[in-house]
Length: 378
Image (cartoon, rainbow, N blue to C red; front, side, top):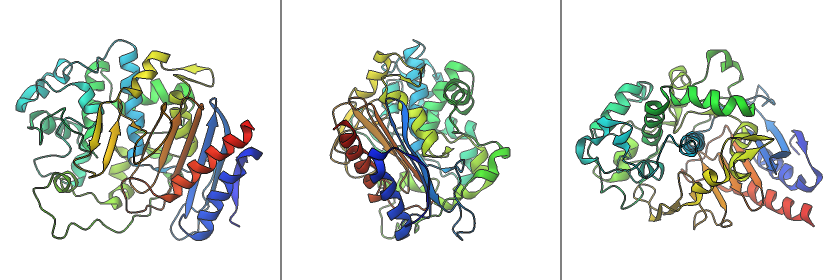
């Protein structure tokens, strides 16, 4: 069996076995898993290799690009500002970002940004991957753009744009970039090793992602919303291996961390706003997560999705309890929080699968954690 390092309470040995089995089967090359109950770690494990050549072991402090799991950090920043009375989710975006009213978007509300309902799932103007490092360009284009569908009527996954949209609102309110604000207001108080915009000093700890097979758009309708979303710029996982990507703040997609740091931050949601004696949200400010914003077939993902205030809620994709929420990243990373169980489960890996909506590796980890909790309770 593959060597799995770290700590694991006896009730959760099934989680260790699930990771070891995935490493043995080659479905994982290097990965980390964290499970927290009541904000306290019961599983903090890692194993495998930090590179595709399998020459460098995945260490305790190895970090990697977690793709859209980053979005949960962006949501938390917005939730904190709302809880402090500085942001109203039901206010027009233009209250905070006046230029955003262009293109008929004067009635678009902040909650529409949170739930992928703003009609801005991609850029109308063709941009190149490196343009994602140009905050002013990305946000000004979105501010000027007309929506691709009537805002508020349906969700359409804002794969890359969501981070710029929420991030610019955060910047207008706080005067700080979202990566900077997250670092000082979230990561530092919690001691979480998660970064939106990675300092060069941390590059040596990064495990480069192992890209999946490229998406095939052969025969696709160029006018289709999903195609437009993923072709400006063309979504290529390999761009995450470049230095410009790590340095940029791309708050929907380029967060660098591991399962421990992701779970540490998001255990705030599972704990009703508090974890390890640190309170970042009031209980009411945390409850907002579960306010359903949309429920139906997503115009980009093409599957039924149920969104709360940012996070995905229990539904067909992820059947969970009524006080549970989740999100994951391109290739497989995953974070699940359940307030009723006070449970947080995170899985972060370097070998990406091709899907945007998760795979069996993360699902197996979550199932093992739930079984461990049930066994521990008994």
